[in-house]
Length: 210
Image 1 (cartoon, rainbow, N blue to C red):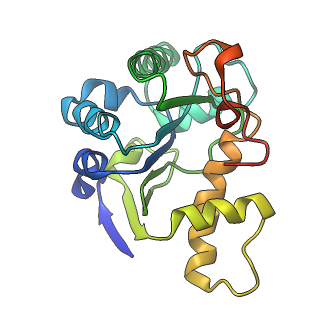
Image 2 (cartoon, rainbow, N blue to C red):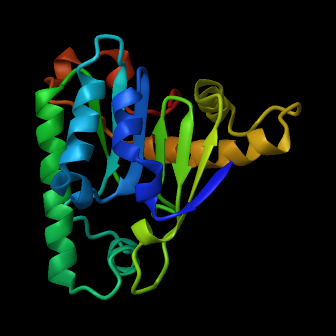
Image 3 (tube, rainbow, N blue to C red):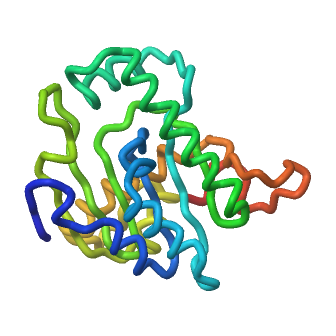
């Protein structure tokens, strides 16, 4: 496991660009990605690969009035006005929606319906995780961890709801991060731009398959 200060040291744009299978983004608000050319290009590089399967994005929608949303935004963007936070949500959602329109067969938007416990980024078998805090220094400048894990296997374990008895401590710890993402995607309509009648089984709400 690797621990660094500031997420920039993990070079997520390059990590995205190297991805060959699947990326999962569980950070709710992606205004920083929308403003960052390297992040945009990294995602586009992955999506343009014929072998790349899918990009799943758990994203907070503008106008979501669930009780957890405002306290979450207060922590996520501590110290900025509610209007500025709402503007960030709108920019984030617009960017991800446009990306889904450009790559309708590979980009799946999952509306955030549960309080996110921590930011998680998964690219193939690399998992990056940080933490939220009520602090004037925002999450990108905090501590970030990076681990390698068998993500497809961990996703299969989420279907059973827990790791198997033979899982070791490191696999169980990695499972918690993947399970957080799988639960965030569960029971959410995959907002593909493909009309509903054309959706395949893999595009329906993730009630059994993450």
